[in-house]
Image 1 (cartoon, helix red, strand yellow):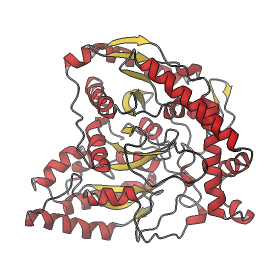
Image 2 (cartoon, helix red, strand yellow; image 1 turned 120 degrees about the vertical axis):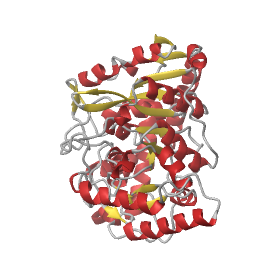
Image 3 (cartoon, one colour; image 1 turned 90 degrees about the vertical axis):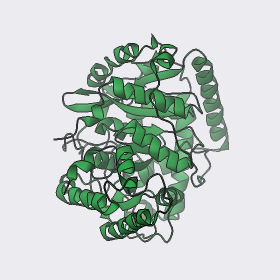
Amino acid sequence: MDTDICRRPATELARRLRSRDIGAVELVDAHIERIERIDGGINAIPTRSFERARREALAADAALVRGDEVGPLHGLPIAFKDLQATAGIRTTMGSPLFTDWVPEADSLTVATLRAAGAIGIGKSNVPEMGAGSQTYNRVFGPTRNPYDPSLTPGGSSGGSAAALASGMIAIADGSDYGGSLRNPASFCNVAGFRPTIGLVPQEPSTGRAQGLSVTGPLGRTVGDVALVLGALIGRPIDATPLDDGALRRMRVAIAPSFAGLPFDPAVRRAFAGVPAVIEAMGCRVEEAEPSMEGADEAFLATRHASFGDDIRQITGGDPERLALVKPELRWHVEQSLRVGPADIAAAERARARIVDRFGAFMDGFDLLVLPVSQVPPFPVELTWPREIGGIPMTDYLDWMRSCWYISLTGGPAASVPAAFVDGLPFGAQIVGRPGDDIGVLRFAAAFEAASGELWRRTPV
């Protein structure tokens, strides 16, 4: 069996499927074989639906034989994130509270991707309830980084990113509140994209706080990300790399020490080469950044309220059920009791000021580029980093500020492979104005090419 096809970009696979150069059955079987061979050491896809996938692949091939019109993701294997409800397939959300839950209906995201032709091959592992950028839980255990299995792949879309990086799926869905698409993409040498808030339809959020969470894609390449994003929003996305003329007109702000946050020395070394790459692309580069004053106030109150309300609703206020969830989630419940309407209003005002300042800053620039993560991939046994460069981290969100500060701007942010240091991948975070998703993706595609297409550097 040609297992090399498991390493190819989804855009290429989609073309070959449509031309019937390969079949959906062949492609699905190749990925199943790869999962069975290597996932024991990674644990990216703990829930599997292989027989259903094979049936869907047979139907997909038959549709092309009949000449049926097919969707943009026709025949591409995917493992839906285990936060997404999948009809007839166990959906745990990484929590003991949902160990045996089998939904009766697909979530909006899953239904949309299935309608576009994607074939569900299983469910990708997540941290409990999606809380935290380290993928471990008491239902399935930890997911490991394909580039070094002693390290984490990040999260919360860690199972998705690890599966992509190791060739177990062709495309992936994800979600991002405080970095859940971007951190794992950076840690696993794949591309991730947080779209502008509201671009991708999703179920309405619950709780007292306006949601910052978005649904978005992960892919082996920027083109793959655009392919999945187009399916999610119902129209094709042009991710053609910007040409030299467009790049020469661009002003790009570089923020290696964004917002005065601590960054691990390995991250600084990895990011040091990024400005030169962008200058070589023809862009004007300047070290500058927007003010993120009030970011903690804008984010934490709504985060506590959102997660705390959700967990209380799920547990019904039962102390025994609450005791089953991990300490970080119980912390949100405790903190949410201190968050009143005035705190939510203050948080929203603080966020509005950040959006306004970011808009004013971006009047002078086309893009902002900074490191995705403040730390390199860390040991899988560590629930979250306790310090960065000798500076203590007070909670499980503290080390992720380089991502969730950007979430507050409301705009698109891509994570694109940028470097390897000590054998580990690092991503650059490319941030645009709200609504400029295509501009960010087209620049990201040009950066991907200028960086030497690091996605081709696969795990041993």
